[in-house]
Image (cartoon, rainbow, N blue to C red; front, side, top):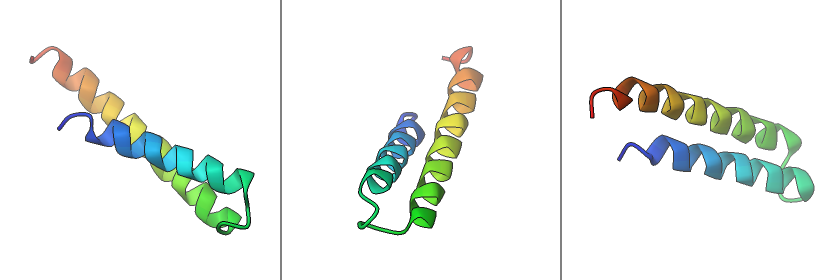
Length: 56
């Protein structure tokens, strides 16, 4: 359950980079959005991970 943010974040970043490599898949704006969302999810996971580390 706690790895959901990490998995979704990495998935978004990977899809974003794949779209940037082959721009005919989608527009660059969608790729940029996915990368930003992915990095935000990874950062949120990292904060939750560090906050819960002492409690487990």
